[in-house]
Length: 158
Image 1 (cartoon, rainbow, N blue to C red):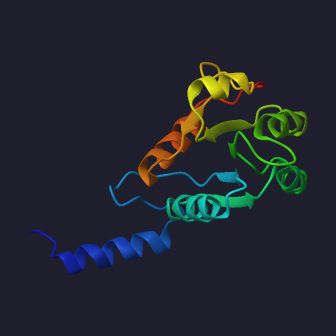
Image 2: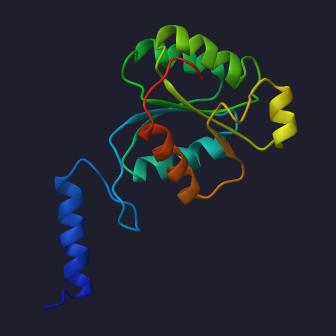
């Protein structure tokens, strides 16, 4: 017997309330990891936080590298992934990540930027050695990139 749309919606609502792991609209489960989202662009930070929270992640947000370091110091061992813009005022993504790795050497990192590959290489981010998400991105590509990085074993380098 086939479920009606209302029955399906009710079942999914009950499952969502009873489970700590949320499901994306396409039905793929996500994790319960904690992400530190760092970007100086407020609208992108808010959108990223909303997308990732809806996907089941716990998200801290910071507007720059210095704020991210303060949050990370308070949450040592609790952050599973840092999702950061490469270029930010005060303390950029690369410098912030280097300092974060002193606190948590195995911390996973996903860099993002609207700059082209050549510009990123000049700024010290080698895309062949680093997980990287090109801006602009969709909600689906953001979640896929985050999941891919979180699925990798943690390492001691960024």
